[in-house]
Length: 353
Image (cartoon, rainbow, N blue to C red; front, side, top):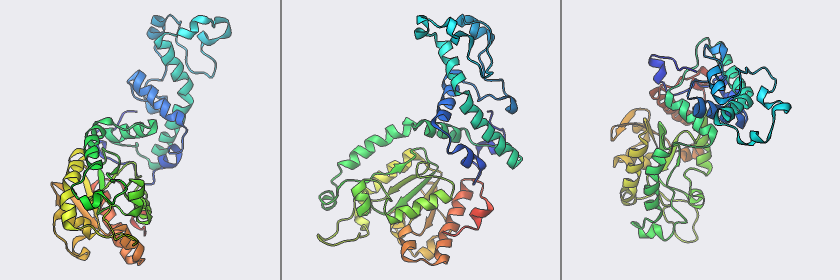
């Protein structure tokens, strides 16, 4: 399906609350296989008569080259060369063009399902569905269960160095494991917290406790998922606490300064369009200065040339259940969505966490 030209072609997000989320999001795995077949074997746009693109069937010339006869259009009947009287042992070694066509034929129902959903979205919204080329590629890659390897390959050696880091001996001897980061290595949006807690130290993934569950809810309400953003901490080890005591402690400025170069490498590789700092301690780790959240949040800052939005840590919202405080965080996230040029629905604008 051709992407529209003009300024909308570069916009990174699907419409919030788009029908495509409900119609396409739960499609079977065959959809991903269908997209892969079109992309890898035809190198052409997804075709469908209603979208004004050539029909998805092989050309007469390609069939003649394959020695398989005239064009066979998908009519719900089996292809001529698959009829019982024509089957033989030679079919075990089908030529490549025939294999490609067979894949197209088998995956056509899944393609029709995808295209019907897209047509319905277009008709409901009275406009063509749009997405940037990068977004389309990510959707296909996520459906196939594979992510682009470029930034992953660059992050891997950094993660390996973090895993064996002992620059802070008191942390290296008390941690269960380091907590590097999680999410899309090509993300436009990156969240930065202060340090792992007990839950994160046990699992090796940032923001997996109660505060992490609330962060996940915020991300999903924005129209994303944890797989589409990147989440990391300034400090990669859980700050040590006295033996026998429970809870977590905030990292010291010295600990964060020691670990900060790792975070800088992550940001340089991922190159997010927007950074979100969660809490005053994370702000201190990033900017080197600590202020009151009342003065810092709600307006744009800059970190090494990347727009930075400062907001409350999810743990603060768990301690303070005031609707007004929750609304402040959501207003900060609305500014992030606007900065990313994501379309915001009326429901999102009126939402309270």
